[in-house]
Length: 252
Ligand SMILES: Nc1ncnc2c1ncn2[C@@H]1O[C@H](COP(=O)(O)OP(=O)(O)OP(=O)(O)O)[C@@H](O)[C@H]1O
Image 1 (tube, protein in one colour):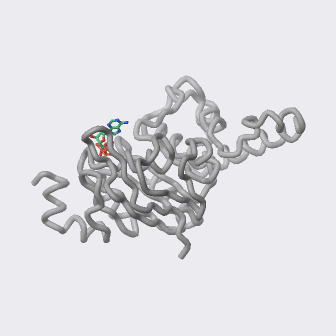
Image 2 (tube, protein in one colour):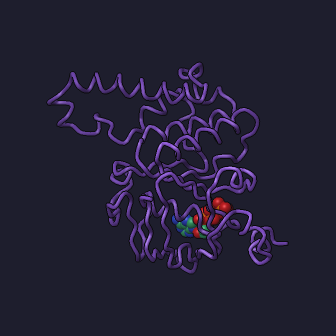
Image 3 (cartoon, protein in one colour):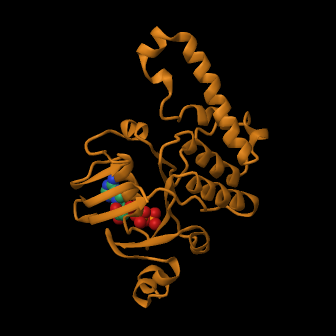
């Protein structure tokens, strides 16, 4: 198995709040790892540390064998760190397709030299990106709403567009922050199927999710976090059958 995401002794604190306390973790190609734990455990912060929203205090993070240390968010995205956000961060007055076209990791318009030296290639690449976006939407059976404003589609579909936007980055590391929150019915099944397909296609997927049945259905294994620490790694069933962890999680 090939390690895609690797964290070594990662520490981060905000004043008196420790969000990552000596976190070491590896996620393999094809694996779907669940990240569970009570509110405030540090789960989203771990995604923020991997994707570069804020820097680690100490420790190191690599993806695909390449160190991310000291790199800003966009450089990490180019190295293949794709993620979704808890509150989606979609541009609500833009269409689903437009939201996707501002996301890919190698968007040629980012490089001025590319525009100046290869204007024709830019147009071609733009067409290729549109085709890529439409094919992702088609997999989600959302191609019919490609040109609809995000404002005008149901919440479950908005969450899928958030995932679709992340998938425009075809890197090996996929971080999903509460993909199922508020999602039910058809969108729920689609979300599950697409995440599974992405792992089968070779991505290493990490999912923060409070929906325990989603985690049970989907994840090969899970990590339990509390107060910035990894307390245990194992199957979801084994983690939640631990009285101590269940008490921490559910406050029972
Ligand atoms: N940028 C920041 N500055 C200060 N404190 C922060 C920052 N980011 C996170 N925190 C704090 O760190 C702690 C962990 O937050 P985090 O969002 O990582 O938890 P979580 O496990 O994802 O929780 P939830 O399940 O509720 O989303 C919280 O107390 C939060 O207020």
